[in-house]
Structures are given as structure tokens and as C-alpha cells.
Image 1 (cartoon, rainbow, N blue to C red):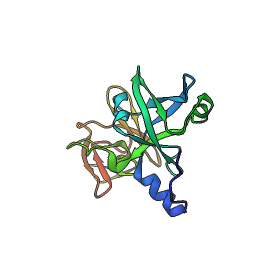
Image 2: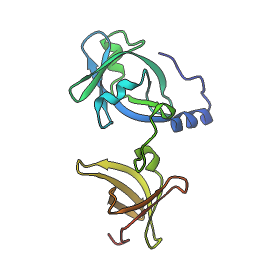
Image 3: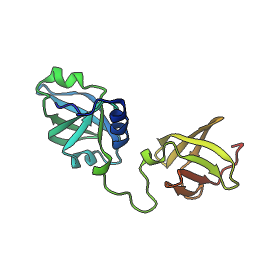
Length: 180
């Protein structure tokens, strides 16, 4: 396994900004160094599109070549370069799996990567600030914005409520009352 070349604090911040977490190593798989990965994607096979995964927390992740990988039920199992046995695979348990943002396909019109929404200011149609997107939740029916600002609000991310997403202005406008 290789380490990223930059070790400065500024370099680590840039690395974190350039990576998108796509899953997490959940366990070793078999005895020859394979790992089982829980994908954070809509379809498990989406991880198979990337020949290099960045393993670890985004600030300290290292690139690792994917030797082989395939979908195994709701998971992905993969053999990673430098991971030669079950003990090496076990040491990766819990590690995040990321890919470079530049390697992701462009989002379609009216679609957004969750990562792009986190940190955006949320205001209602009257211009009242409700807070910032802290994270998102997948509920099955629809995604939900977790907005923090004074208190936590759970706002469904659906067209009936979200009027506008302006990534350039880093703002989301919603049809939501401040006392909800």
C-alpha cells in the first residue's frame, strides 16, 4: 500500500476535500486478504467502477489499487494491493473507502451528491435562516436534511419542500416554517 505524498496540514485538508466516502470495510472475507465492504451507494456495484480506492479517514487516506472486486449480496468483496492475508484484511476493518471526487460522474440536473449539500445554509422562503446542513439521512421513502442552527431540524429533501439548491451561493431554500 502506498501513502499519499503530501503530509502537510494544508495538504491533508485538500486531500479530505478531494475525496468522497463511498463505503466502509466491515470485515475480512475468507483467508487470502479479501475485505468485505459496506457500500454507502445506492447500488453496491458502483464501487466496482473505481480501480483505486482511498482507504482511511479522508484527512489521512492512502490510495490502494483494487486487484479484484465483485458484488456479494448487499456488500462488495475486494482484494486490495498489499493486503496479502486475513490479518492484513482484519487491520482494515472499520476503515472508510473513498474515491477522488474528480473520478465521480457528473450529477444529473436536479441531482446532488450528499457531500455537496453538507455545510450549505438553509433558509425558508421568507429568508429566515434555519441553520446549516449537518448531514443527510436515507429513510427509504426520501432523503432527509439534518439541519442544525439553534436546534436540530429534520427536513425532507423532496421537491414539494426544497424550492432551490444553489451550490454556487451555498444555500438551500425550503418551504419550512421556523417553528417546525
